[in-house]
Image (cartoon, rainbow, N blue to C red; front, side):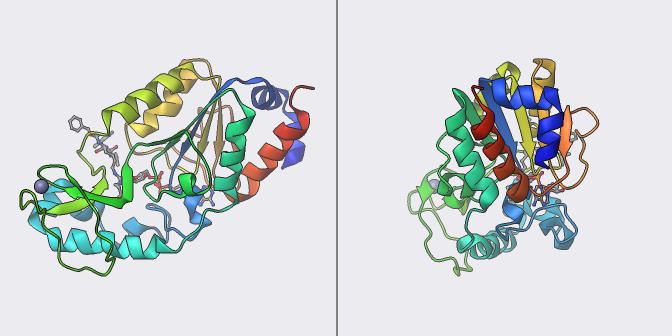
Amino acid sequence: MLQELETNTELKNALLNSSNVVILTGAGISAESGVPTFRDKEGLWKKYRPEELANADAFMQNPQLVWEWYQWRRRLIHDVKPNPGHYALAEMEKLYPNFTLVTQNVDGLHREAGSSNVVELHGNIRRNKCFDCGKFVEVPDLDLQETPKCESCGGLIRPDVVWFGEMLPADAINLAFNVSRACDLFISVGTSALVHPAASLPVMAMQGGAYVLEVNPNATAITPSVDHTFYAPSGEILPDIVKFVKENRNQ
Ligand code: BV8
Ligand code: ZN
């Protein structure tokens, strides 16, 4: 893989001479930590239909089903650890003057790996809040089957994630839009690039004249338009990229 880094001068130039870097990650970067993705063959959506679970109507109709699904996912990710891909991005942050890590993931693994400037577009599955008054609530018991009720207003407690049909946190998505438009290097890692508005970020980067790189073992919705795709697992190729930049930067 490093040989590709040597021969492709445009890619080499983008990695070694960029100042404003934006990374967009999706479920694929956590796959090597053992977190199931959504749309891969063993993904979460294989067993469930997203419409049934990851939206507010489903929750209002059947809070128990949705609550238990999230509790099951939280148990699933309770002991998972960041993988070399997460750690490589935490390293990469130190190599560029402006570096923003925008994630669609809700597993919190980027922060756990040491990344500091993380923008969580879809919330965080480890947090809970009241559906009605928005108050954050600690629910330490991952085996709690009952959907808890808010002590202040009696509303139902829900995971603090963005469901289909819900607005993303305005500060997060606006920051993501601004940095994507202005960057000179954008790297899309482990996302099928199907869910909007996150999927519009690489397009904004392209329109802003950035070099757009993709890391994904499979082709995605944006593969035809990006500058280069590394068809490889992020846990393998990201450490190679960081090593290459460290060894060749400022030469
Ligand atoms: C909104 C909840 C608007 C948290 C999620 C028609 C056209 C365009 C848009 C729409 C449309 N109809 C509806 C919409 C809007 C909708 C949308 O985009 N739908 C899509 C599906 C068509 N978007 C929304 O509803 C958003 N809100 O638009 O609000 C609005 C406007 C006005 C007023 C009110 C509202 C909300 C979007 C957020 C939805 N929440 N999840 C949770 O439960 O987890 S979506 C879910 O998909 C996750 O959040 C995930 O982050 C996201 C994206 O999935 P990926 O991360 O890409 O994962 P996926 O499995 O798809 O792909 C994994 C990839 O990894 C694969 O490519 C695989 O090859 C790769 N991979 C595997 N192994 C590795 C790897 N890569 C690297 N290394 C490996 N080892
Ligand atoms: Zn409440």
